[in-house]
Image (cartoon, rainbow, N blue to C red; front, side):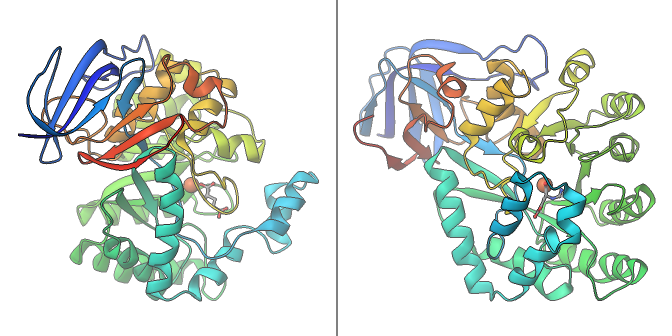
Length: 406
Ligand code: NIG
Ligand code: FE
């Protein structure tokens, strides 16, 4: 007996190899059923007539893989409303930082949290993400900037074991420099204390560094990421978000899994990324809010660099938790095609999190993370900007929520 049978949907399967920035094939199968058992997709085909505990009639509805948010800072204390007002008055990132805004502002509020409070914040924020169709989210540490809070953030992520979303934890102690230490002292602490603990306790899948002029320089980022690599952590890098800072080049040189933001990568950086198969994780709501330009999408296409998407959910540059809104901005603001944006929020995001064997497409043997949309045409996801497209959200074969009257 099946656990769930979805009948006659218009499936965007995203089956097949790594998605590229060119001629993306969404793997559409019309009027098709999905049979699910033990949290896994058992069979996809026409007219499956097996007994099932639950059935969903998906006629006239698009069915897609659950959204994967490839880049977030979901665990943070407080909000930054004063900074928001400074931003809309036209103050720059640097000016806001000098007036007490920026990452350090959130560090104070996050250090004050207990591990239990952190789990509650995760639950509250991830619930919002799940309600708009996110079934897996990467979450970075990086609002502790000391041993205790960085480890607490990662432990809270480990303690968070709800069945309606999966977290992919990333250690990002190098998100800023703490005020109480010299640069060298803090980098020594990261490499000799934080990273060995993260590795030995398996607290994170990835290590990320904010490589940017004024934050971690290329040499400093290289030192931290090389140590992480030595300890068998996978690598990510915040690269060239505000200006060209050598981040994309370092991404290529180290062969990281993904380089993220990439508003101002150099030509050489793009070439090196291509040569080492680095995925570009793009964050269109963050760059819209920062007003610092948009990434060279056409260059990524020409070089066949796969593009993934993330919300960058954080209290400064992107208080945005909805991946359908991110897909909307990817199209309207970046000029990505609808197909690129959907692949970016599903299969390419799975690659960016090294989970492509488990999630990101509708394929037999993969986890049954699925969205039954209220739409008949997938272009409606970005078109109705800001509208929640999800009718039914399924995580590991279980309906995690259903919206009435949609
Ligand atoms: O991805 N660039 C660094 N980190 C975040 C901003 C975090 C914050 O402002 O709190 C980002 O945009
Ligand atoms: Fe970020």
